[in-house]
Length: 180
Image (cartoon, rainbow, N blue to C red; front, top):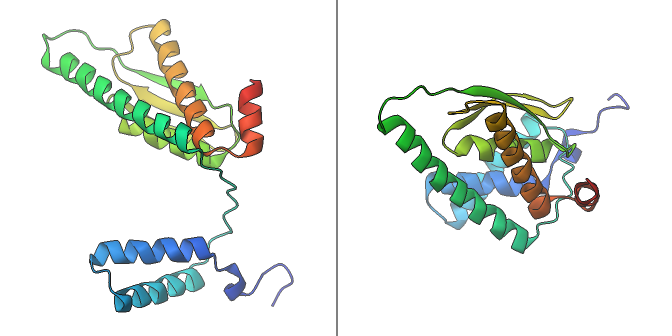
């Protein structure tokens, strides 16, 4: 055994084992003790044979900010759905789309992933590329006509990032977000 590698049993992460067991139970839709035990054994096998690097996410969930994040996200989904429906079902007009580069302020892979996924779930936008090294995400934005539209979309993404940081950010990320 090399000094750099830990034994596999030391790489087990209890949150991952619990999460995989819950996924097993949801997939089987049978919440029995036997199914939970078998799910845990499968999760244990997966974690032992396919070890992942340790997750070091020191999240602090802020309930009020999380509720606001969800309410605002649902609002954005409804409004964007109506705008996309109006643009596609209305009289034909010259739609212009854009690829918008957004440099996120928070140097967190978790925040980058959550922001990109939430923006992708809003109709009319799609993440095209994400660069971990620079925390830059490129989005395809629907019906963006000019530079002002690009800036409005960029500010919408940055506002989503601020809401995610407020809801899940670490103390350090929260301080960095407040100072900017």
